[in-house]
Length: 170
Image 1 (cartoon, helix red, strand yellow):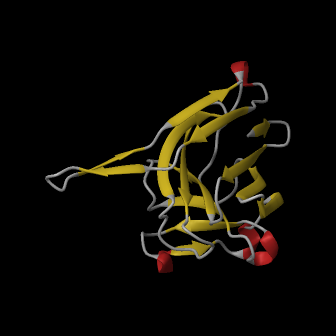
Image 2 (cartoon, helix red, strand yellow):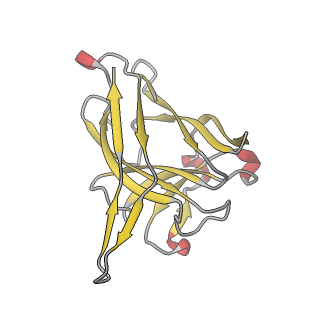
Image 3 (cartoon, helix red, strand yellow):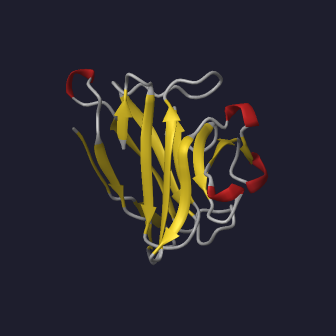
């Protein structure tokens, strides 16, 4: 990611080692419901990622934001050598959306599909915190890597889900 505080934007790139929808979300609590996401589905919307409201866990409740809120720039989603790559620039603070303050930790979400059909994120999902701006509030740049979710089912049927995350903002 790259923050441009003078323009009030953040540019992000999400790469998945596979071919499926890719989602990057903004949350107030780390939960899907009530959050917002940029979802890239190659082959849809002219290969332009769209902004969505995450109103629930069923596909019917994951709704595209109205046209006037589709403010992403330099946005694309494509498959390159078997990897799905989504890029976009988002305004940090927009009316009726979750504000993103680059100087404090933001709660981010991520999800990966199993194909290019918007639905359950069988490729993995998770949340993590990141402060987008660099030291002293200057323009920040960094990389946050999240590994697909690993679910282990014990003999007693209890499931444990692990998401590996590493991050740096410089």
